[in-house]
Amino acid sequence: MAFKNVIGAWLLLSCMTCRVYATTFVVVNKCVYTIWPGILSNAGVPLLANGGFTLLPGQSSTLQPPSGWAGRLWGRTGCNFASNGIGVCESADCGGKLECQGAGATPPATLIEFTLEGTAGATQDYYDVSLVDGYNVPVAVTPTDGGSSTCGVASCSVNINSNCPASLQVVDDGGQVVSCKSACLAFQTSQYCCDGAYASPTTCTPTTYSEFFKAACPDAYSYAYDDPTSIFTCSSSQYVITFCPTSTNSSQKTSSVVVPANSTGGTTILNSREMNGWNGSTHSMPSIRIIIISIWLAFRFLTWDK
Image (cartoon, rainbow, N blue to C red; front, side):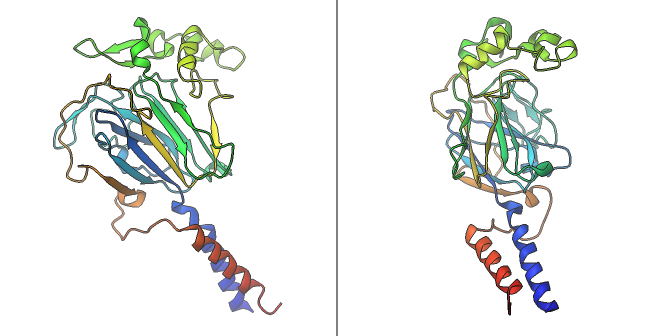
């Protein structure tokens, strides 16, 4: 009896840990220019892909965050990196490095934010697209198998740079708009930054500038307290993060870059243990079939002879 209970408990524990790598992010570049995705994990959460990599036009890469991962992703544009990974980007730079390694995006930057199931007791995934720090590239987050009508597409798929108000524009040396500041970044007042006397939903309300962003991208955060229409929930095993989802944005220019040998195209699968220096063999994500079999076996052992 004791042996049976031990085996049953072991099977249940194995099943409970099946979702360690049960979620994947498929990052797709549909832009006509190169995107350099940046990634920042929350404190105490494993860093993915050392914080950044190169994504050529038409290329995709798959990330496998652990259960309970939380953090943000963004796209950098107009980057020039030397062979040692040091350089600079025209928009959303992260300290002049190809691999951001814990550094965040320099605004303006279109942010994709995730809090996956298992974080602080969360029973589902939370995700959004945020323009609170401004805008630089169009993006969409699409759950592929959530199995629920509540699993929506979070997106800002239009080219805001082409209509950015003059007071919010960031331009390159040639005068081309490469990103669009938030009002907080441009004017740095409490009214626009939702701090000080404006640090609550009742005092920090939409402004002319946040309404400009909201009109362009109704599903994205336009200011700090834009929660009701901007945060999405789901329980999907895969989220597709697409830069230039409508494939119509061609306003950004592509800069020269020294592409690492493992980033020449196709699909790259990045396991978070490999990304953080784990040198053992890789393990693929367990399938739903394995989970179901584990539950069935645990049940059979625990009810044996009853």
